[in-house]
Image 1 (cartoon, rainbow, N blue to C red):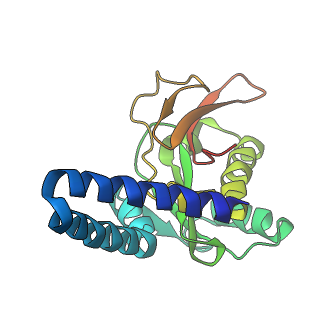
Image 2 (cartoon, helix red, strand yellow; image 1 turned 45 degrees about the vertical axis):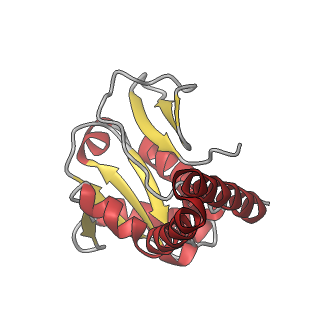
Length: 186
């Protein structure tokens, strides 16, 4: 169902982009808009995960670098019968986590240093489990460029911006961790 919805969303966006091109430049404008939309979609599909991780200066971690985080993601992916995503640490104090990538075989999960400091292992497992559901449901394909919030004061679960929504995870100890929810269709 997500594949169908994604296809419809992209078709509507393509049509809207081409309509704007036609309105601004006639038939040539529409052709230019089509070429730009095609190139942008191709580039986003293949490289958006790398761009987002680089934008936030993410550092890939291995089992040797951070056995606790890597092991936690590995345990969760095994339970969900998923391929192991790449795991990244983002050098920011804002508590956050996100998933990115074009499909489960090319997924990445990132957490900030801030979320690692405030959550227990069990709480972090809950946040990572949530992010991995986006991989399973291929929600990460729809929102190709997640932008972790730099404003920790914005934690309303109903706040929406484009195809993303900021959600809060209130843990058993009362701690709050913000994360970008990419399942804009639910």
